[in-house]
Amino acid sequence: MIKYIGSKRTLVPLLAQVFARLPVKTACDLFAGTTRVGQAMRRAGLTVLSNDLATYSEALGQAYVVAGRPQREAVRDVLRELDALPGEPGYFTKTFCEDARYFQPHNGARVDAIRSAIDQRRLPEPERGLLLTALMEAADRVDSTTGLQMAYLKAWAPRSYNRLQLRMPETVEGPPGAVTRRAANELAPELDADLVYIDPPYNQHSYRSNYHVWETLVRWDAPEPYGIAMKRADCRTTKSDYNSKRRAPHAFDDLIDRLSVPWMVVSFNNEGYHDPRRVLARLREHGYVNVAEVDFKRYVGAQIGIYSPSGEKVGAVSHLRNKELLFVVGPDRAVVDGVFDGVPGVRPEAAPV
Image (cartoon, rainbow, N blue to C red):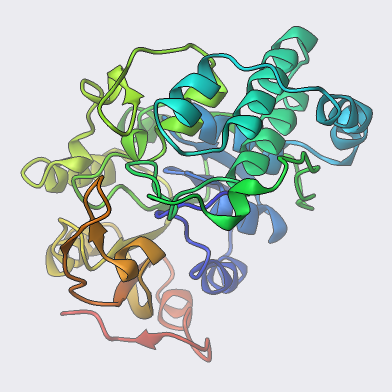
């Protein structure tokens, strides 16, 4: 799975236990990102709708939420053929390996060749999503960043010298789901599910900007880049209300009011724009609420510090750990009250009430 600052990797074991305790069969991962939570839902036996505006998330959803063993077998030989292709430098190599330094040119040339060949195959989904995911994950294993694509390391990371190698994405057992690419607030009133997981962007940093390389790799549209990071031009114009301190609370209120699902699981980082007390009050209007607090280490870039393009340290590390607040909302008070009982790593009733 690709490195991702918004990933719920550390929270997934807890979420899996929560999902297993709720009386639900269908679920929507509304801000899916890398689909880690959607995968946990699928493994729990739920039929999952994976939704996100990012095109790379759509590809990941096809690979991990929709695809099963038959689709993997269908592309196994294709994956080997793609992995054997010689490099052929193109837009990706120039933009992200020469004008920027996210990958070494020998791997960028392989991305160019493999990605063009995927389109030439004209495969249906989810087979195409499996191949795109395999390429994203292969590139992620040889990148030269701390995880964000807002900058790259001054010196090449040791892993960047390795040869990019395609691997079959991991098999996720469970019922096949579906994928959509829509704005969460727009999709909300149309959802027909027992459960929705809500994990919106929590600060000013857009995921489109943070992971613009993956967006370009999947879209393969050769956008006009700008800045040292060589971001997509549409990073300047495509903005979410959830990335605005002023508009984010209203966007969240609007989302909650549009939903008619019986069960909600909501998570918020304590570094974000949302006041936990206000969130709790709004959620109580929709059912019984239980809250847990989870403590975890910040992403590696935040631990290293902030550096200028010349390599000079320009910022200090303020703190090394974060807290995640997890809200469970539902119509059955007994289930809600006991949802965190005996679950390690959480502090129930730690919410600011």
